[in-house]
Image 1 (cartoon, rainbow, N blue to C red):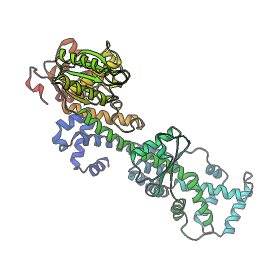
Image 2 (cartoon, rainbow, N blue to C red):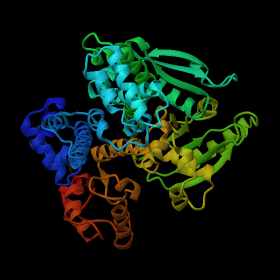
Image 3 (tube, rainbow, N blue to C red):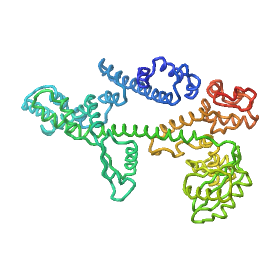
Image 4 (cartoon, one colour):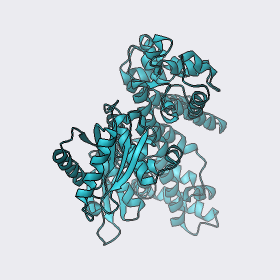
Length: 553
């Protein structure tokens, strides 16, 4: 069943799906499969393979849930052939939950109390027998007399209606139809819980159809609700919902019809609307998260795959106003040559002195490029650099580069280990200079979600976002390839088949034994076995190594 679903969703041949699943189950990584098993996958790219792997995980989780639900119902002795067939045909978690709902252990409810009082027969008669009103009242009266806890006939009726309301709320057909109603005709509505102006002003009296609301609005509304600034609900005309239920409950004229309409109204307001509203909002949030992850992933991929400026000495500028512009000079390999702080921007306006300091650095270190961070004071700093280059007649080029995540990296433990002798602010300038030389090698040192090129990334489920972004970084790193003798542990950890621990072991081996002369030497690295070697070797290069093919993929 799983293979069939994947085949239909991804428009693939049956053999393709089987081969991909076999490769994944054998422990192969996505980059390895995409690069070296094209003949088995039919040339599927890494992004398609990742989507397939993610969907495979979802379908297997659904299958496991199906088995669990089937077992739990069977243990109660309630598994009929019809129910087993329905469970086998369920394609979503919501369908499985609907089928299991009547059998799920419940806390004490109004309906369970009514059942304990013996009112189930009265509830059943309302549904099944076309009795006259006086017959129903006679039965209700008899039950009230038999139970001391039922003070009168009205109490018996109330209990019977509670039983029916719960049965209606557990009905698979009704839940499915009402869920579709909310999705098709429901509206997402918000109201302000404060009179003060906030960033959520656009949502203080907001209403939009569920089917058209955008993902970024859903995430913004969710945040406003968490911060207790907004109240949120999904609404639909109650008469539409009640009509769905009565079409199921009332099949022929009966004295019970007024009671059944009361049941439908109560079941909707008290049980179904809150439950289905939660489900639909959860679905909206999941869709919004998936959309945001796609945007974040595309932005991250674009940032990581910017062309490097290798072989150049770079002066990195981390712009600022009050604290000045931090300066770092790195050589062709990224080694730090010089650092400092200049104050060409307000409020200091030390333009002439700053010009002299930077010009001296450029001439002393024969710098080719200036990299200017795009954060606070970036525009003012760029204008200063432009005027300086023209005035001094320098051949130095300048570029504005993304400093996304630079401040996070500069304060990290990794940066402290790499640059223990430099202040946090100077580490940021070093990072800006280095990401000009090789954006990919520098950006992999930062947690992907901290790079900050996404939409509402802090509102997205952590594990889901981290897994998607790690996949993007892995694909980029393995697409470009890695120099085995210069790559940092951070960069190596994204190579197919290598964990963070093994990446650290590679660097330690290199420091102890010198550069790798051939890929085969990797097998001497602790904890790097044949499988890891097979997965990673093709993405690791040794320029100028003993074996010419070790510089190819």
